[in-house]
Image 1 (tube, rainbow, N blue to C red):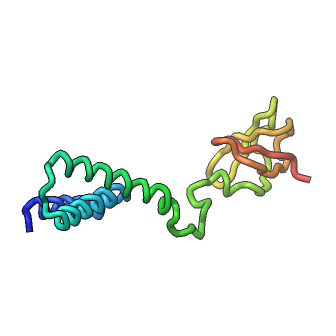
Image 2 (cartoon, rainbow, N blue to C red):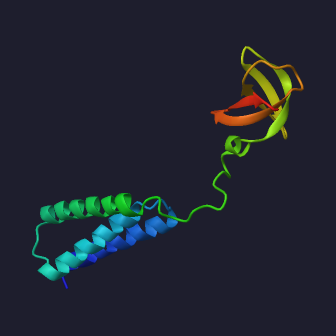
Length: 145
């Protein structure tokens, strides 16, 4: 077996180990392309120039990353808590009293240990409002009925 085949398999192994140490699902696909390049050289007798090897590896890398992006990206497990890191979205539907009045469309509420800016129709302190949506760090509210 030609030494160049071992080279490509060693590159594949390094890339896959690199993926294990620093996960990001990118080096894995380059490692697969390098392993495929080793198989191609093994099947063709390794009589290919280094330039053609680099070109074919580039094409294989592009195709393998493309396969990941097209068919596998975002197909992981569905979270049982999709709002875990989206604190504002967790507050939709919550009814709270105004901490500061809504004047000219803006006011404040206290939820837990955090103060939130709210946007809605003008209302005095203590008015109970319902969180309807979130716009960045501002809660859009309406007066509770």
